[in-house]
Image 1 (cartoon, rainbow, N blue to C red):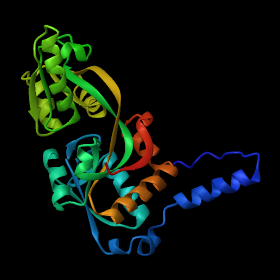
Image 2: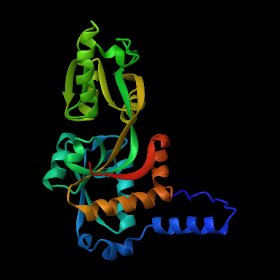
Image 3: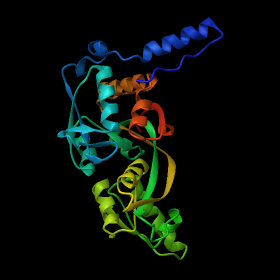
Image 4: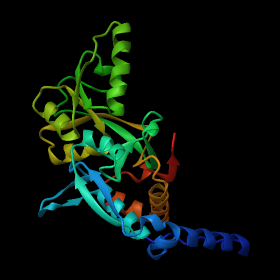
Length: 283
């Protein structure tokens, strides 16, 4: 982990406050029994979609091992808080229902919305970016959101991007342009394949995922445009599980303060500008 840069304070009192804040943020795995006794001995199950690089994917050297920025950040938080953990793969569309049903304890990288916060509690830790994935050469000349009118566009089922398209399409019609032919995909990999196979003109998806796919297949795919949004992304935990929610918040705060999230983002090619201080959102 990258150490926090030393800071010089003119006043000894300010230095003391800084030291106190760092002590409060420090990892304390041995303190789990004191802080969150109901979590002692429990195995926290994290659900993940193993087809969403660079966030989560299978290790090419070991099919049963998972790697990615979400995986490494989650591990750091679990270890920081002294939590036992297990990773469980599944289809992206099934992860949120699985959290609600108690089949898994939590999932990382869920876009926050007030509607979703009625179902689960969030600990947000980064901002979102969207990218428009198209065929190499950009044959439909997609340069901005306005160019999606009249095109066949795929987005993940139930995602923020799908909601954006369903709002944009009527606007296209009202402006005398063609409606958007909206397709939905169960996961990011499916959306990418629809573009690669020329069944869709554009895949509107997470920016980092889009850039990862372009880097892996530069002769096939191209990023037409991107947008950095104010949308927040977080860990989703079933409502009512306050001890786990608070433990994950503590762990994220500590890992971030120590530079762990920064280092993980750099390792996996995520923009560090997307990092935000951990924030609990329950509505």
